[in-house]
Length: 173
Image 1: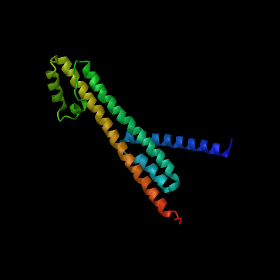
Image 2: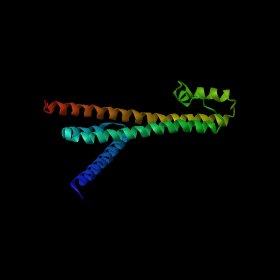
Image 3: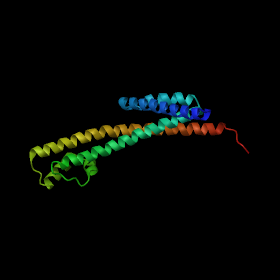
Image 4: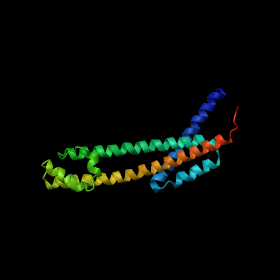
């Protein structure tokens, strides 16, 4: 095996290790609802200087993947709301508008009456579905906000290190 091939393998393994480590730290951040675990990791990378920029990039990429997954989860929950309510004969013209309404329970009850769904059991079940959906979405929204905060933090440090690195590099004429 040539040296170039080994370098490629080592680079791949190193990136995979960094992604795993970043994934573990992101899970801790989400569990603790705090960016502190990733911040401590980033601080240790920053102290190592520009040589750790790839690790920061991999960490940022992992945070982006996690954020995309949470956004997908949000969409699935919203689609699930529409599907669950449809099983009770409710047609939602705009799921997001219902969820964003100032008083979503009242908006849903009005919609149920408008669609001639007067059965008390069906109404209670639909209200419970709405309540559970909103609870799940609140949790996902908090996770999304935290991941966005972490992404911004990582981007700031990447820019800062790139700037410092560029300022230290000799200018070629």
